[in-house]
Image (cartoon, rainbow over all chains, first blue to last red; front, side, top):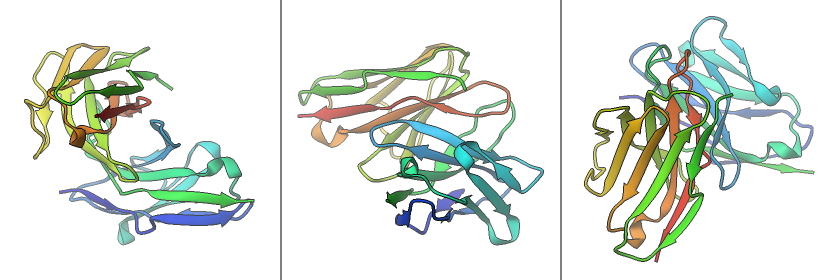
Length: 116
Length: 115
């Protein structure tokens, strides 16, 4: 069975500082990995995804993530955080990426707080 | 990106009543829709997968008679919480897929409060 672990429940960073959110996954085959962001009371917005190819993927809002198979990780990074980045971040693993829509398993989320 | 809309965004109902939540894909045909439930400050838990024109597939532990899912068209899926009780209070989110690349698009969510 697939699973996702986000070790950090809550992270606080200063505006302008760099950010790294950790994500580890467990999946028997080639994983299809996603990062989503959720603002309070809202749905989820896709930040980026990894299906294959270059292990460093670029997303929206200046985010990037690196897939490391040896470490079963897909950590999310941003060089300089903005106050508007404060939100809940979810890492997810999917079963497939072509044709059929992917059934996703989510991590427990990391709440990001940004101090001015 | 593609747009998925949920309605209502908030609903309050009395215990014992039924509530219907709609999930619409506005600009694409969603062959598959997923329904998730999210408790406060927790992750999303998949409830069921629905494919247009067929019965939904429920995850283990989800009562199919309690949470009725209908996916009658390629742009609309509905979740009906039957005989709702306070423990059904939660944030329900749908997602839809069907475009090339397998990406899912999420609705804004519906917050259900059962009194």
